[in-house]
Image 1 (cartoon, rainbow, N blue to C red):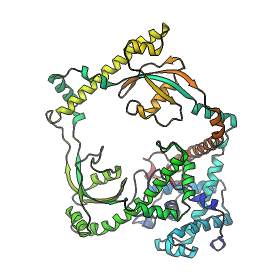
Image 2: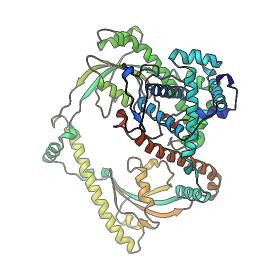
Image 3: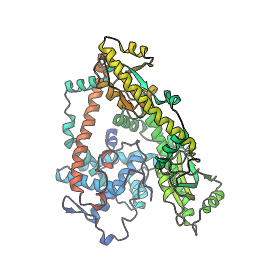
Image 4: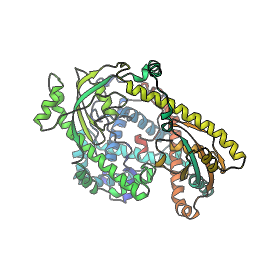
Length: 558
């Protein structure tokens, strides 16, 4: 096959290389051993067929080749990130392969060769100038063979065909149906609302020592200080790596990659992007940050190797090694599992690693965070305890006052609703009733089901809840009093504004394409989920996991 690889159109490359930016995932190395007892390994059965060691290893190699062509980086040992399980992905890939065989999906040598040529050609940014360099310099040192690449190509292209066939029903969207969906998503409401916020009632709360003591004793669990840890850490930030990461991207078909990601997620993922251009700019930024984070992690790995080799493993070794490398060591404030450190912006993986540290294994990392990679050492562990009332009196008092204020706000809201109902029945307007009772009325900016944010109401009500209340209320009517976590509200819908016909005409074609793509993905995901529930039910390692979907899995990232 590789002797027939020739230059072809760019679209062939784009069939494969769609980068996913929603999450930055790293996972176990494909060129490490599957387990220490390979000869007796049991990989389970799939749809009644036993999975052989060869099938599992081949699929695992394809998963990692897929990762490489998605990100431009090889996954590193012990780099599994939250929410991505390489073992699960391998079994899902095995199921995809099996379904291709059962449904007679086969990719011709010419097509695979053409796509493979474009994929290798794209690696010129890594100084890969030929197929021989690709196989000898990139694949061979990591234990991959040319047949691994060929097999991956066929199965990845076969997946596209499989998705096209299985998801065909999702593409059946008539013009009339698309128009109706567009109208439903884009018709706007002209509405007003009254909010009953607890902050307006805090001053009315009476506080006594007896009430505070009772509130505290009845809610001891709420004031328990959970187990905490404190760690020292070395940071490998991305600020000095962003420029190089951007330069590396510019050596590739960066604009095409950005465009394909935009076509996949549109403007909905970035709530602060008002236009396609702003969304694409955000996508570019995320891709650059992802590459910079990968480089930061590599630097952290180089630093961590000698640290983990130092014996005996003592927490102070981190500071010793950092000092010898001219790197600063910082110390976190004590933090718990739920909230994490307050003096450093890191994610769940940092917290998980910190709480996994012991005296015997004090070191963790590299851990990829928002702005860099970290290597940590356990400093101290603080057990959980219930503080005395005097220690937390200020918090107990604030919680008590807020709880009472919420009750007062809700009582006021329900009382207002009764008066409002009577006033509207008498022909009074919503505004008039609000003025009579001196309840502040808020004009809600026009919004539709496609609206992504209403900043002025953040913290008062979730946008989806507001949509649900408003769009279930007929024009000219008021909703019932609806409780929220911050009190409650009543919405009055003045009018429903039809979708802009001119805007609809200009956007309908792209909207139809978007709907068809989403429905095709949903149809394929529904089918695959059912197939996985049946076909992978005899895999012990997957029985406790969430039923798979294609989002975030390799089979959805073609």
